[in-house]
Amino acid sequence: MKQINSKVDSSLCTLAPGKEPCITDPLSVSGNSTTSSMSVKSTPEIEKKFVHHVYDAIAPHFSATRFAKWPKVASFLSSLPLGSLVLDAGCGNGKYLGLNQDCFFIGCDISPSLIKICSDRGHEVLVADAVNLPYRGGFGDAAISIAVLHHLSTENRRRKAIEELVRVVKKGGHVLITVWAVEQEDTTLITKWTPLNEKYVDEWVGPGSPRARAPSPLPLESIPESEESGTGEHMKVCSESNVSRDLEEEKHIKNQQEYFVPWHLPYHRAEISGASAHALAAGLATKDDKKGAVVYNRYYHVFSEGELESLTTGINNARIVDQFFDKSNWCIILEKTS
Image (cartoon, rainbow, N blue to C red; front, side):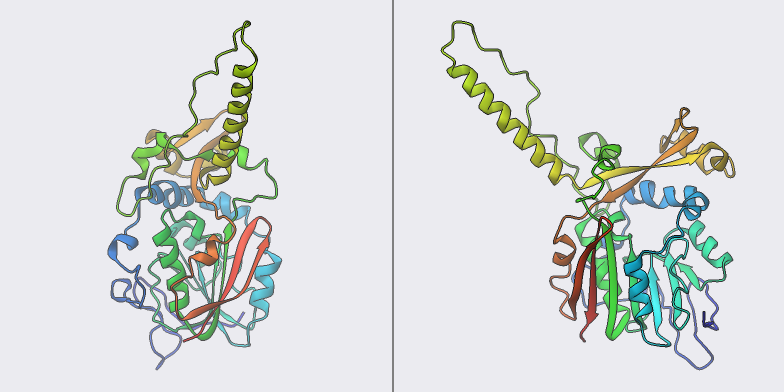
């Protein structure tokens, strides 16, 4: 991989002597979007507890499982021109950093623990928030956001993250975004996830927090049996009612997009630091003695078909050049037009 002569700290990164800084003060970055208010940039509690805290706690184990490159992402990166600067927003353990050795890469992630893993591997990285990227506008030639937006808990924050990706690339630059789909190819996976509903109301409170999912409209009372002396009309009504309930329940499941997805951290991994002990004490994780693991819940908003594209509506300086479904993910490629 080509080397960037840069020194990364909390506020500045330069490519070489005499070049303009690539990193700006996050608080001074302003875009032309309508979702740049501080309320959007203020992280909801559900993300702090069930995204940021979790990935910091599981970082080494998570990293050990993240090494395979998605062919579609690899193809996108390999297609970039010689010398392109690629910005990876939500780089995780850095598995895509340096994939194309003819390009320069800078990665950022909200998790200091994951960023340390990247740094130890020699990558150019910094801690940053996807909704407030600390780069000047038009800095990169391309940007990627792989499996990141589904961890943002409001529509405005998801839209803002896309606006930021567009802002930081040059005119003509491309942005690849992938998110988990609600239309999972392996439908058994969803049965292992916990749907967010009314019992999690307390965790959804905070600036910009999403609305708690309302209780199921389906009544829980049992349907009375028909009387033996009945004419059969009552049975017909009950049968129709059962069908209606089944259809409503199926619709409710299909409309479910907020989940807690478990991560099982083996006990021997959890003992490396005190993070898991603290999480267990705070009720943010549970023990599964049968599997010998500490179980963390990660917040996900899984995307429905067309939802990712709809978030780009109103971003006037970008157009969709490709959109596809790949490995249970919805994906789009944007081009910055001005």
